[in-house]
Length: 108
Length: 112
Image 1 (cartoon, helix red, strand yellow):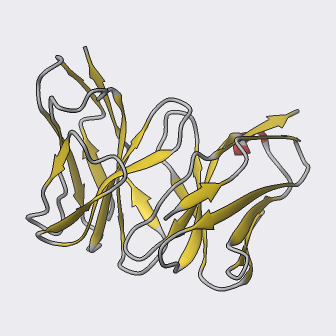
Image 2 (image 1 turned 90 degrees about the vertical axis):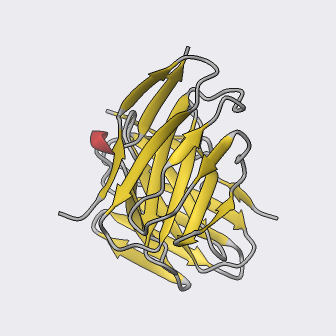
Image 3 (image 1 turned 135 degrees about the vertical axis):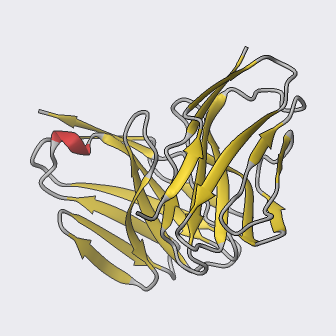
């Protein structure tokens, strides 16, 4: 079977750091992607982890532990424009699945 | 510029009518996907295709149909059998074996 778990909402303060966790179960696993979606828009790709460890891209970092079926997205120096929904998306045998996403609220 | 195009952006249909949503990509990607998103919800997989002339059902395929006659095109038909068709439909493509998917702008379908 397949399943995805990530928090439905997270609130943080502008300038702070926030971590969004994701646990997954898929038939076959190639890697974990993260996407950002602003209200009314389409998801945009943020990062992809195929191997264990931390990948850093500017203010965003993503971590993967294959043995724990766990990953997280770390957002640093939060800006108001980071207010959006964030989706983890494991790549399975032949498809990419998405969960319900985490709504990130940023307070000034 | 390479990309993935969905049309139209907004679509209105009467209940009981079939409607086809267009999705075209010029990224030379093998894999294409259709997702449905309801307000405040995640993306649910409708159909996906890894190669031309082959496609598989996703988690919510009932009431939908697709074709993949060309690598560039993956149209989705929402049939009258779909009980709750009003939603935001997203098409995506990816290079085989990689985790990065590129999305079209989406089609917001309203059935009245």
